[in-house]
Image (tube, rainbow, N blue to C red):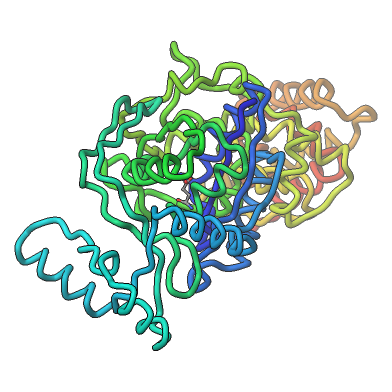
Length: 464
Ligand code: GLU
């Protein structure tokens, strides 16, 4: 059975790259009826925070990427890592290293000056029994280093093809630090093994770690999972995605009024496509269509404009009731549910974000609207005021107040006044919404209702 995982380090926000990795793992698991596991890699106590873990859990939940197991916390598994590290020591595949930081720094500097890649010189591997005992007696802090075998390592990445490292290119990297915390590569292999992960799908930044991890799998005789490294996400200027290109955090998109379905759909296309020019897909369709074979090697470009476009498409095609749930945090006014739903239905066509939608919806719910006087100045003529006053009277006398009756009344009045209907329609829209564009007038009148319609027409007629 397929078992995949997302393994975030809780050191900040849930950024779009992490969300994309989570999504691909999720789609792959669901497609193959496998399991999706969440593991929090919080081994670094100085950088990991509880808040960040919460943000990550919240972000994944908001996106609807529900995991089947976990969260597992690496910080709760330190004894497990130690046990495995000691096993390698006892098998002669790892060793204690007592070298002080200063010495290592010095060596690193020398290598840099000579322009040769730095590698630990195995000084502690060569210690005599006596030297070791004396260091132990003095309680010198020690790390555990892997004794990297001198051999070629290669693997076939499902996206990037064959990746290889020549013999001697991997140094004796640290497994356990002096304070007992495991390094990323070590904890990752132990956990991926213990958690039965058979596909590792992660960002391409980690591709250079994989050969090291494979050496560890071999040292333990663990089965090696398949690896798929996802392409980088860049900004439209082909530079590494950064704040300049838009928000990086998934929750910032939530706050900016994006729908999780739109973001998810957009993220799916950052490195994958189902073929053809198909872009808009539900989560179920993405599960159906997803395959690692169709993930690109080439870097993906994050284009905020396109994401905004997706958001407007999703707002347009969502059920009003579903939109209402997402809209609630953005609404500053309340109203009866039926009214809210009809206000959403009439506004969703034009909204780019939930913030836009909340603003548009509130026009139908507020008792009073503030007219942007400077913008609508040209409509504030005495002629318009008189005409709209008359219109208000006609509307008042309607027993049945709906789309058809109001349209008939307005057109009738225009005829009597010997003007074009549009000469009433445009100012009427401004009077009712404070805006010069919007949904079809008679639809919006029907949503607004008789009282508010008449009240606003009258108020407009009296604007200073
Ligand atoms: N904690 C690592 C990260 O957040 C996980 C990498 C991996 O998936 O192996 O980048």
